[in-house]
Length: 376
Figure 1 (cartoon, rainbow, N blue to C red):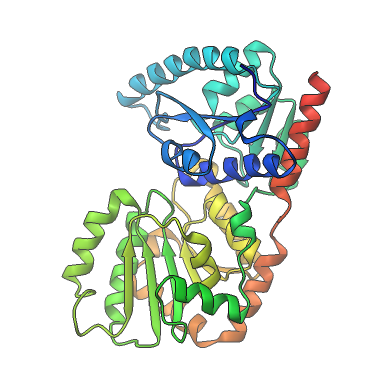
Figure 2: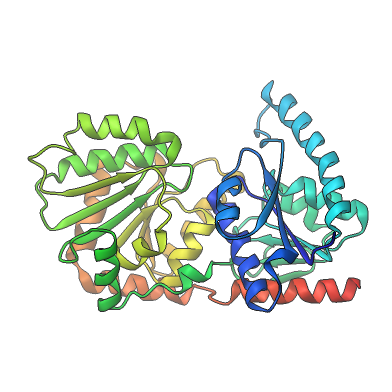
């Protein structure tokens, strides 16, 4: 059988959601969903998120290589090697006209297989600094769709980072925000803070949010919706319980979940977001104009999260806190004045919106079509 496009990559929600955005843009441009196939990792969130979005996915073995010398890397290299061999068979079976990769360890094997078999590759690089896989595959790609001007990849086309249509449809008008609050079961009269460390969670952010919320137990005008990450949920639940966040004395409305499928509703409803500075998160905040407090992941490859956060802070769209300084006390000091000053939040949201690329997914879909036509 053959398909038009094979979407490669995954692992975290930050990889899967941009890939789904491109796939949905291709469908919007008239391609049959059955002509679009995903290849990802057995260990990644694509195993559930891709089928839920209506696409088929092939899952390969493998995990990421740590950026230091460890015994675990031997197993990682073996897994990626096995995945490359299996990816060759997958490419021969589906015979795509083009491969679009969003990078990461899950994107490398199918991209490598495509290059070996002469299938054109479009690399989607949405971080301020491209990851190792994108830098390697990007040297040989037919085109590189990048989020930032000046990204050091050949044949670069600035498209911005792709965002799914359901996020682009977010309504942050007064009526839209009240409706979203109601669907989430939140009181629209309260100020709503979304706190998230990304799909995998972030221990330091989770600890700081729990500590901050325990300090604000008497704030009857605030609701905090804490998306802790599935792998951290048990520990965060125990910490929140020990801090009294589920006690009857709590006037703060504290909600805790592991993963939230209704993130567009939260983006519509929230007055402020506290988050890591991954490219997908930053792209969504900018696409819909949400003011934020960003806590970049320390040690991210090429320190790209700090660079992502700085781009928003320099535009007046966000306030940043270094991970080592992110505590309950520091969060309270930063969040309190932001919640107290509605005009400041409005200005931050408007600044964020100026950085958004709402047509990025469509532009990448058009680029993939163009590359496929040239190859044909």
